[in-house]
Length: 217
Image 1: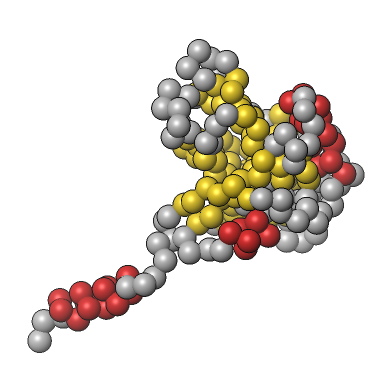
Image 2: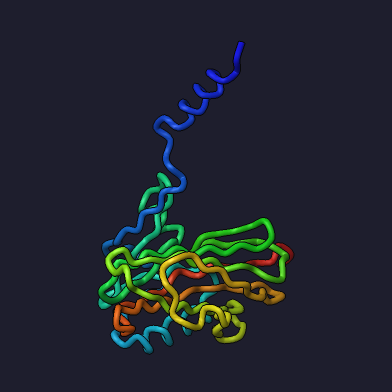
């Protein structure tokens, strides 16, 4: 008896009604509960950046980043996940301006990885940050990517670790950057400036951080 019909039947059964784990949705969230999250409310982009990085340096965990007032909250939802679950897990970014920015941030270290808001436990000395971004409403949009590292509560003030190949505006796509992991671990978050057709900033975003923790600490 041929195994081909059996294999085909199993494949169809597995696909029937199962969520597409590759599907990614980007959803605006109305007034999510803040909890221990970092809420960006400042009108000035420079003030918002200063507030966010100061608050990150003082935080003891990996807080979600939420928008407030001038900023709005978007959440990245993968597969069949619930929106509220994605918010609770910190897969959020604060967005301000005229943009339909779709942002997804991952971090991998060794054989471990996490999305924004997550935590990776590893002894690896280096990690790779992956940033996927696009703005379907502005096909000619370009993006400035900023990667910031924080050594955690009581550590050094957050510092820029953006590699040279990302210092210039880039088109939509997926970009990767190696970052060093401090001996006691660290946290990494990504900032985005969306540039319009004339090169002027039209929107700003900050993702929730991802933490790398050491299993022996």
